[in-house]
Length: 468
Image 1 (cartoon, rainbow, N blue to C red):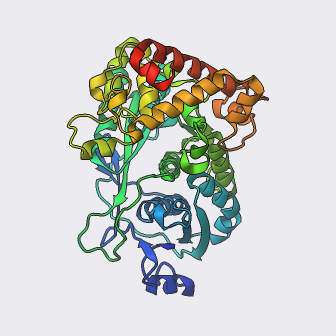
Image 2: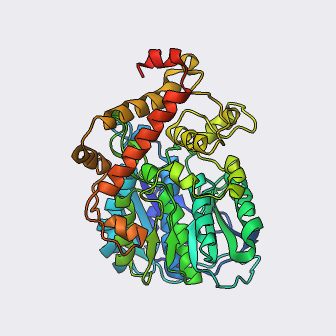
Image 3: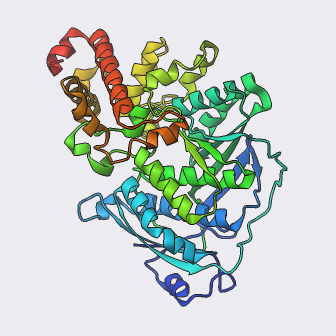
């Protein structure tokens, strides 16, 4: 299916192919323009709406990422021949089509690795900058040392705290498409602001399908929530903001277990498991940006690339641990709300929830009432879906315990090959990493901790049931 970045009439793009796509009824037009658009976008600095006069190069990147993200939401995976893989043709007017054309091979590889879909591209000449509606033009001092992705989860909270303890001036960047994610980011930001004052600020970007009753072009209804390309949008937002404020270092705090996201079973191979911060994706993104040539000396770092979630949580000082309950980790939190579970934002049975609970147990902060499903104590009562992730994680962990290092090394790259030297780049370290042992050691530590915790908390009857 073709998705076209709408830029207006012939004033902005007069190429015949662009005009033909506009006339084609089957083409989905992604329209972020303020007067009649079908996608809404807005920036908020410390909760106040602002206008950012972005350079055309960054607008091209951001609008392209929005086209990919919205397309991901409205084209169901059931439309694919295999029930998963879809075909996207992204048609985008950009101010320098030659550069985008020269970059498209690595762009295609990156998006296909991230989503498991098929991508092709058309580039059109954008004649001039598209005017944006100016409102709340607030002057923000350009005095940030680093930008830190801020999702509202545990890792980004701990990462931001670590940077602030190192005396860095931090601009947190969050993306949201719903009120809960936005309010979570704001609550966690307040905890940081209470401790560090104006050393930390929050810039959020809202991107979502517009609720306008009569947009210029009507989009298909949202039908897909796997959101495999959300991380590309999130990082494109951060890159856009980094370009605007002339900051060249972006932190992506994510524990190494989730970053690798080693498939727990054969059924989870490939893009069926998320690759949002996988080293291969980050490396492909860096290569794409280098080819695009709009970022000078950009540095992408993940300080937690060799840490488990428990090790990340233990970096937080005790006075900051009280805010952990306000973070959100669940892969299904929207579904929890749809079930009518008021004030419960975690399903309790998905892999991120399991990682979260095991980590919080280590510091005495695990609270079972925060989860819709008590997977550890209510196992016999659960549905197959609610049991499956725990069973897969147990199977995987018991398997790893029996493996030699060389076999664990192969697991490290089973979700996507990458050179071990990327670990050195992501840490920004002078140490030379030449093999996969840091990831293998981390995987062993996680497995040992997980099985030890389960042995302590699972009732004897459940252990017998699952042959633990």
